Length: 410
Image (cartoon, rainbow, N blue to C red; front, top):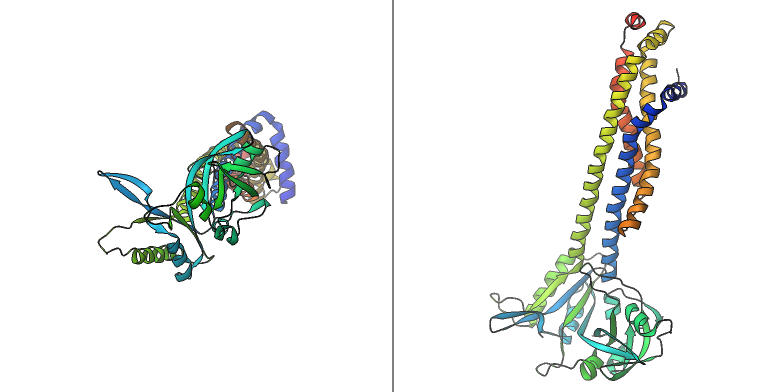
């Protein structure tokens, strides 16, 4: 008997008791659907973390100024201005792995346009800042080196600022006031979205570093070239850990720190932080898939149970088939194909249920889900494997029946 003939016989046998067949397939349907939906949830989390890595800037190391201690109280990073524009120039010049090093200062201000105003973060940056952060301009132009050299009163606005101040009006060419200083908007930044710690990166205004120091945020009297942070972009393919160590060694040397002294700055390797979160999301995906796979095993046990019942019910039929010339392998193949058919039909219905379930989760929980063809193929293949594994014992038991005893069975 061929596989095609065995499949036709299996389908006829399954149609004899439709309700029992449907209930048996239910375990496989639930298992496959759960695997696809849970893998989709995990893949969505993984994709979200990957987007956040991209939005922050690839291969990015942030150097923050040191912490000030007053009356025994440590005030946090950035309170002591220990970094300078010269440090950024030295990092870009002396460390081969560095592509650009962009110094910046930060403050907050009410930005006014006409009769509208919006409180936002104001960054004083150089022309290299957008390259360091992998940030593009969707309308207008970016900041230019000559804007920084001339302390020009020009600004780039993020998407959140553009929406709240200008609405449907094109911001390019409009005049805004930042702490009563007029600025011409020369460009609109591309959308960045939120960071993993919930900061809206689009709620920002970028102005030239020199302009920020001279006219808006002010400069340190002790060191006019002081900055709050340096964004360092490492060249693709370079070792981030090695580059971080070289930056630390260079800054310690420039700041004349002794071996026993702590760093007066703070290095933050964002790629490592987010890659750790990416690994956590990957583990979450595996965990969810493993939990959902338990449903498939339960479904497989249900198939074995029903197939054993079917062998018992059809003992005389098996004996009759053997009496008219059916070989043991024909009987084995017939029942094995019947079990696999149960699994495959349940798997197909489970795929539809999983796709629907993942969309329902995305809609109700507002959680991003991504169902890949690989996840569907894996769940379907696992369902077929369950059918073979749990169907083999009942099929083997049917094939090893004695024909004479089978014909006598009541």
